[in-house]
Structures are given as structure tokens and as C-alpha cells.
Length: 250
Ligand SMILES: NC(=O)c1ccc[n+]([C@@H]2O[C@H](COP(=O)([O-])OP(=O)(O)OC[C@H]3O[C@@H](n4cnc5c(N)ncnc54)[C@H](O)[C@@H]3O)[C@@H](O)[C@H]2O)c1
Image (cartoon, rainbow, N blue to C red; front, side, top):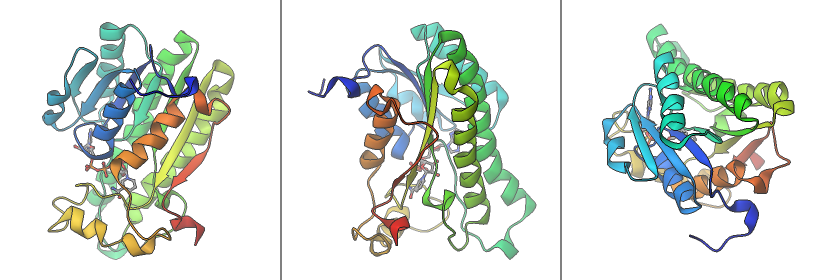
């Protein structure tokens, strides 16, 4: 266990992390575990099963399906007996100009990023209300706040996530529930796999658009998520926290 100030300790907490098989989700599972949390790690990719451990239960499912949300929260309760934290991280992107985007493209991105976030949050909040407290951390994006070419569906879905975060904060603050979102700049992961030839190299080439001169790493976003999930951020709710190397300060 790291030697941390008490507010960062997640000992005794149970967290769900969606999209946990790789990238920011996998880094988040590793960090929350290191800080003492027990975890339900879910993903549409059954590679998530490789994370299974005494303190990590895994589940394969599509966050866009209602059934997945029910199964995920039920697994947290069955295996660990409580639910304190939901990290809505699962997401997909698409790079297409608006005029080339099909209805199926639009619906596909909205289903995973916006509907998925809604379904997971709804199911988790029901259980958190019964438990008397809870924390939701949503993974938004710089395009929740600013425009970027070729991201119509993705940016709209991430804007929806930023707004959903605020509504949950306002609607359930008096039930002991906080909700915040982290808005990463470009982070070097495999998110563009199948969209461009080399996802990591392509993303790394965006370093110069951030004032600090480089892209982010998954572990740097996980740090912000762990903070927002912890009592150290106890007076924060409804915030869109930029973790973008200064991108939106320009
Ligand atoms: N990489 C970036 O530059 C960047 C920037 C801003 C925000 N984000 C957001 O961070 C989050 C994590 O992305 P990443 O960069 O780690 O990408 P990634 O592709 O490495 O990880 C995303 C994970 O989500 C899973 N997933 C996708 N669709 C799913 C579904 N329908 N149901 C369940 N799981 C599903 C994938 O299988 C994958 O394991 C996403 O919400 C993404 O939009 C990423």
C-alpha cells in the first residue's frame, strides 16, 4: 500500500470500473487497488477476465445494454457486499466529418458513451441511495467543453456525459452522492485501434497541441480518477475536471 494522506485511502471501498480491459480503465483498476479498493472490472472485451483476483471480480458485457448495468452492480453486491464508487470509463471514438457520418455511426457512439453512462449510473445510484453514500467519476473529454474537427458524435456524447454528471450531482447530493467528471486531453492508448494504422503513434503525434508539449499517459488520468473517487475530494461535486496538459487553457 502507498504511503498516502488519509483522504486518498480507498481501504474498505468497493468500486466498479467499466472499460477496464486496457488503457485508462486498466490503469484505474491498478491504482484503485493499490489504494485499497476492491473492484468489479467490466468490459465488452473478455480479456478483462485476466484481471481477476481475490479483490477484483470481472464481468464481460456491453455497457449499452441495460442487463450489463444490472449484472455489474449485482456482482459488486454479491462478491463484496457494497458499492461505493462507479467509474464510467468505457468509451469508443470515431473520426469522421459530420457530412460523412451515418445514422448508425451516430447511434453507435451515443449508445456506448452516453446511454452506457446513463444506464450504469442509474443502476449504481439506486444501490448507493440504499447504502447512504456513493461517488461517481465519469470519463469525459476535452471535447465535452470545446469543439474539434471530425468528432461530431463523440463530442456530442462526451457533452452529454458532462451534463449527466451535473444532473446526478444536483439530484442526489442530498443523498450523500457526489458525481464529477475528468476531461482528458489526448492520452496515448489504443483507442484509435481499427480507426488508424498505429493508434499510439498517431495520438503521441498530438503532443504539440497541449501547452505542456506532450500527450498524457493513462496513469496520469487514473490519478485524477482516484482523487475524485476518494474522500480527499469530498467538497467536489458536479465538476468537469480538466486533465489536458493545458489544452483548454489556450
Ligand atoms: N485516449 C484518449 O485520448 C482519450 C481522451 C479523452 C477521453 N478518453 C476517454 O477515456 C476512456 C477510456 O479510453 P482509452 O483511451 O483508455 O481507450 P481504450 O480503447 O484503450 O479503452 C476503452 C475500453 O472500453 C471498452 N469498451 C468499448 N466499448 C465498450 C462497450 N460497449 N461496453 C463495455 N466496454 C467497452 C474497450 O473494450 C476498452 O477496453 C473513454 O471513455 C475515452 O472516450 C480517451
